[in-house]
Length: 197
Image (tube, rainbow, N blue to C red):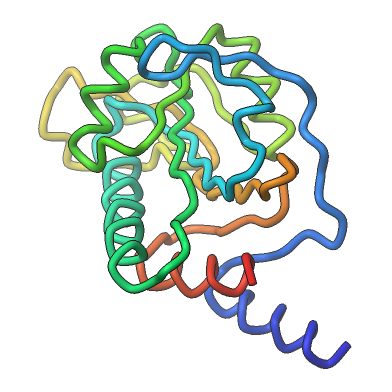
């Protein structure tokens, strides 16, 4: 009991929480960056870190993906057991084709997985992972979520308000834990080590 409380306190300090009872994820079918189907069975046997974002995001998504890339590379150098799979799920399926997801992810790691699909399928998965996202907003419209960006480099940039936590899926395919922003490679590494022990 005391050890569990200590673990929860350590995780809380870095913005992570293990759910008392993992959440089973309903059957779903999406498409990965290689145009292959990705469904619940693909989670099995691996730890998975899922982040919802989009390739045209001007700041928070690429920063988070860069930190996940740092974590992924450093984990491989310092640990004998394999790192979790890193999965980006788009909140902009009308723009983020498998080809675009593949090109985007190669800038972070060719081993990362990108998922897209139709909007309703993506929203169903998002809801089960406690992720909310809205349609694209016009520039300059403030929102309490992810889309409070400023100083856009490109006038064609747009924002999509969405949750920015990382969902931790265990090797049984259940939602096991969550990591809240801000995301830093060091904290992700500490949290994952504690979560997966």
